[in-house]
Amino acid sequence: MTEPSRGVLRLARTLAWTLAAGGLSTGAHLTAGGGLPSTGGIVLVVGLLVWSGLLLTRWRLGRVALAATLGGAQVVLHTLLSAGHHAPTCAVGGGHHEMVVGCVGGAEVSHTSPAMVLAHTVAALLLALLLARGEEAVWFLAGLLRPVLPRPIRRVVDAAPSEIPARADQRRRAPFVLGGVGRRGPPVRPAPTPA
Image 1 (cartoon, helix red, strand yellow):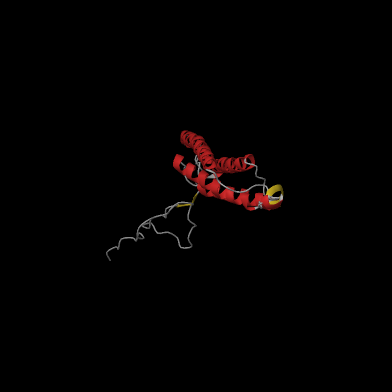
Image 2 (image 1 turned 90 degrees about the vertical axis):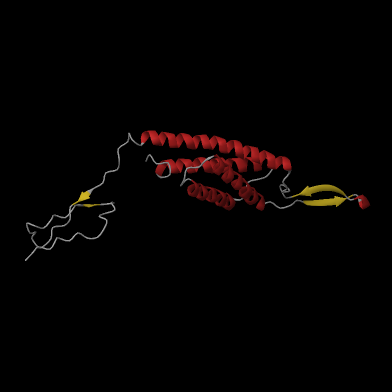
């Protein structure tokens, strides 16, 4: 329970990364005039984000790792969110001067301006710094709680009694510990007795 790379803490870290990556990309996409994808597209995006978050939270994430993963998630999500949009169909009129009269369909033209790239980069960096502070806090608190909380109980099981009665000079078997590594090295043999 006190290990941030396992259990409930890992799920909380995964949720934080997923919400940060998805919220940043989706919010920027909607702000720029884009629309949400279909229900299947939303399920695909959420599934991809949760899967990526679960893979990433196996380890402790620093500022560089968070900035790189959030930036990469924005590129992938921008592509996925823009994939369902079609270019608008525009009517042309006005004789030989050909002026655009009106456009129907299509939500946006997917172009990336330098200002948009800069805004996404700054947002990803600031969000990565915020998440890095959260990561540091989670690992710090886990380190403080680890010595205080009880350790998991290990059961000790004695070896099954054998059918052959033990001799007086024979050593008793060591108990077998479940979940342990066991004895290492060559088997112990009784020393030969002179005849």
